[in-house]
Image (cartoon, rainbow, N blue to C red; front, side, top):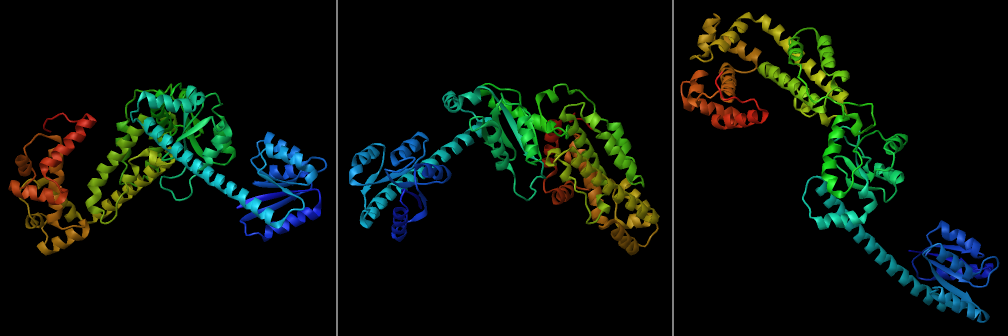
Length: 523
């Protein structure tokens, strides 16, 4: 579609030209009119006009002056000149200024159609070429961005590529910071993300040459001009009501340092969890954090001793004390991660004990594995408290139910005491002096599984510990947990664990070796 501007000081000529243009079989978008060059220049500055059909001789600003002014202002527009026989010398000058043609007054319908069609084809060809060039440029920029992102994340690239990319924006790469921004939303929370909004704000703050977007997901990562105040971008984000956490490295020089800067900015971002009230985390905020610590296991043990009681308030308070910001902000973020891991591990151990009595109910321990899946430390602590209080309720309900059934209580104790011996339902029911059938129903109703299945789970739970923590042979482990044959033990283990005992031992040894806990000796 083409926009046309008609410029003539005579209204009847403007109206006539406009009427003819609208009758032509041309794809025209809008037709504007002006009485002189000054009015025309105002319209050219306001609208995207492709073709100007203008008279030469006009008051205030003639057609030649209009052409010269638009050329000076770099307004990209084509001209078709209208002139009388006496103005032919002016028309020649207009052709010299780049006019695509001229028409003699009075303008003939056929001449106008031919001229506009010809110029329109040129305009459309240029537009198509421009679109192709823009598309190719965008594809080249996207390829460069992807390669930069891969290089930033550790992919190897040669010196020639580094020099080539660095020369595309030498000023920025000479002195830049890496900036990571994450809008404070839950992971996978539905809704439109603001990555492009944040990027447009970065454009306003740093200018087109003052920043490069290197990554959009899972965090927006920008290389930004280090000379700009570090508070500038967070301040504009806040003013734009975009609640985003920012982390910025110190000034960097040269593209070679980009991978190291990426590692540093990720580390800074993780530390933002320690300082939820800061909108931008800088290296100065973490340089004095202590790197030596001891996890408070005694306090953790004391907290879990409250499980199964009516002290839910003390449990919530205990978590708040362990994760108090004054404590966490003393140490490197790894302290907080290790404290989270230790708490979750203990939560998992307690849940494993009570699991046979929970029926279809369960704790959501998986949601607590990664602190950084949460918008901030406060949200993580709240989720941890919620799961701990659920565990407390399960234990409390279990204890209440347990006390009502003293015979069952004694039966459970007897099973855990004698699991390594030949044991069957008749022996246990005789031990508690209950009818065989009655005891079988009582056991399944209260425990949630049959006696045989429960005994198997107790034995295999003990077996897993022996396999993971001792060097006893598999056949020895089978005997130690009450199986009469190696074959029956391995079959039961495989049915429950979907792997052989040897495979489980190897898996746990590798895990313990990674954690530096395996010492290769019997309990």
